Image (cartoon, rainbow, N blue to C red):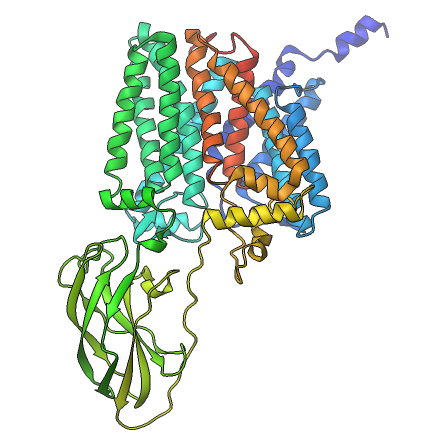
Length: 584
């Protein structure tokens, strides 16, 4: 067969040649939409591995793309700005995982997630080949973000049907004291915030693009739709009650606003951003009470919120089974106002304990309401209604304050104890006791970072294995019981503790590549490039900023979105005319 005929036979037909790009884009669109809706129940269980619904979509996207590559008989684009650093990171993490002193299996799972993120990045690089496709991917992510925020709002309003449906995505509600932290379908409110922050930042670029496109067009509704969507997403972030989320929103607005004003002055785009910023301020202000917002921004955790000093009689004598009024004086030594008529109410109560130990006789003591709200530092005198045990004997009354259905003040770290000895008169009988509840352990960031530093010193070269910080930090933080779901609350520290110098050095290379890409995006000043490019740069900055106080690389929804955004950024940075060739 002549060579020309062979070459002609091997050359794919035009419709097949575009199959790689089209299939890759379809995969990116699918993942951008389903990423935040990962169910807790596995879709498929395999030996040593379970596959969630989102991971199944990921495998489907990869499989379809692989078939398209085979059918088109040509290799996909794989040499992209982040490819060398990302491949090196996967290799370094694999080495760290194989030599992990803690859990090789868990570390390999984490390495697999980073490898999957790289695959999504390549999918985005091959699929987002035009300006229309880049903007479509951002639009789909924004629509998904609106859905997450709407569910978070309904969760915050405690709509029963929504609460029942959300159990498919995470076990229950998250609280800080009496404040519900809504997260919609995401596994934890902080994860929801990070996801929505990236969507919000990228959406700012989409808003500016729509404004520029509407300059010579009578269709104004796309601008209003994107503006409203961004306000809804901002409300979703506020409802997560995440401090870093609000800081990141402010940072992305400032970055995009500064870039817009530098390139075009205080034009319609800059004014739209200013109006959006004002709207975000109102959304945040009405999301919680002023005291709740102030407490959240001025304390790391709720430990200092719920404290009471109770001055009660040193000893009391009561009859078995009687109800007695005992005078006490209670001082609010915390930062939250006590209100017995709020939802949930804060009430005075007590526990009956054994005379010579902390064993509990009766934990749920009778409640006594405060006559009026008790502010920080205020003292109130009242008569506590106390129901005595039915068995005579010697006891102790442990005085306490309860925020109903939320917490007892004495289970918080640093609680101030107050007791009265009690003689119960009557017929003697056996007294049954049981162990008291465990005091809540909430290691703060400084404790976690200190544990990570000790971990790094102990394993400086390759760390304890990717994602193994949460399995090992208890011993380094001197915690007898450590929650294995707790991460180091810092993306950079997490990588260093888990992977040591080797993995962190390669991760720093990837970060440098990301910073270089973001810088290139900010230099795109042409109208057809600047809007979306700056939004993607803001999304990258959001990940870097929030990563200082939280870690997100282990969660499927966030690493999927991160990879898609980095793919968008690569395409824009590599092509002077990647955007603007076609209207959205």
